[in-house]
Image (cartoon, rainbow, N blue to C red; front, side, top):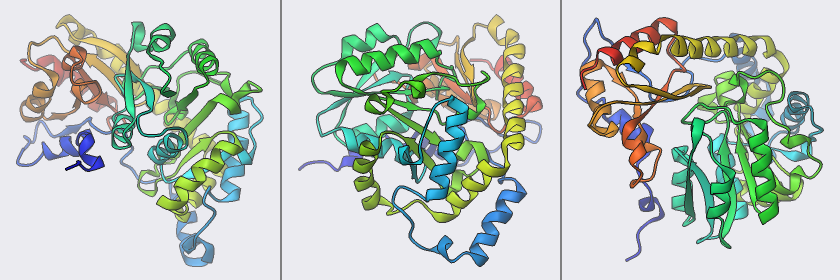
Amino acid sequence: MKTARTQATFVSPIVESRRWLAGVTFADDQPLLNLSQAAPADAPPEGLRQAMAEAVLNQTSAHLYGPVLGNEDLRAALADQMSRHYDAPIAASNIAITSGCNQAFAATIQSLCAEGDAVILPTPWYFNHKMWLDMQGITTLPLPVGEGMLPEVAQADALITDRTRAIALVTPNNPCGVEYPAALLDAFFDLAQRHGLTLIVDETYRDFDSRDGAPHRLLQREDWQETLVHLYSFSKAYRLTGHRVGAIAAGPDRLSEMEKFLDTVTICPAQLGQIGAKWGIDNLDQWLAGERAEILDRRAAIQDGFAPLAAKGWQLLGLGAYFAYVAHPYEESSDVLAQRLLREAGMLLLPGTMFTPTEAPEGHRQFRIAFANVDRAGIADMLSRLANFDG
């Protein structure tokens, strides 16, 4: 008997780590520090919520089906915003709105791959990307990162076969936090173009990149629509995680293929999330700049406060966006230590084994620390607990 598609992959690390909380109690002087999920826990700004509330009460279209590829006003607004951010001419016809960025990735893969095809993923990988490929019968070609937690073009080139269809990159990276240099992305674009592949670049965390201006030149290339698919999420920018609003930038012909998939899954993205995202683009530039400054300050707090951990053998491998990626000095595997850290130090974080192939030894030495909801005081507490942990 054949197994179901879902049995081809692992349990979501977020779901699994939440199960670890069952039956665990925390001391009053050591409350839970939840460092597992890279998502803001606060509600969107009041103005955005008010715009959504008014739409619920007064806008009939907020309760109806909309276009499969998203509302025209949001597509145009995002195209204009991206044109300014990347200093590139992007049209509304290049934009599709999806029910979250995970769906954007899923739609992209469905438009590119058949069962038995292959996609290159750098490791440590974003686990939902790996899960989707598993469930579609698509082979994942792991690309272990090199120096600075960056993927290497020559290593990717060596993995390509006649069944390879795409290379998927995430920058700023999840789980490692590193920001991919523009020259590296150019080199991956050239590699994909040379082999007739699609380069998928997921920039879910682009609004928290430490660099000013366009982080790369890919969308400035005249031929980008033939090779590149760009993914984005409104969830992190405007705290819309529960409303599931993502986006794709690609050539119109590619979007037409993705439209077939999207029409059979959600029919259209939810109206309220789109209304909120459009209001955010129109009104929240300064607010978002403040959010970015706060995240960059937290990043600096980790960088500045890591010395006591380094003295005990910890390594800071990557840092940026919502993430610190670290290596521990202990003999036990990170998946075992993660549950000890929860019980003994009140910290929930994800082991590197959740971001790497089963046979990869490096995952057993690593952790992802998500600090989206931990301020400077919480970061100081986190670093102290890790420094005092007896592994």
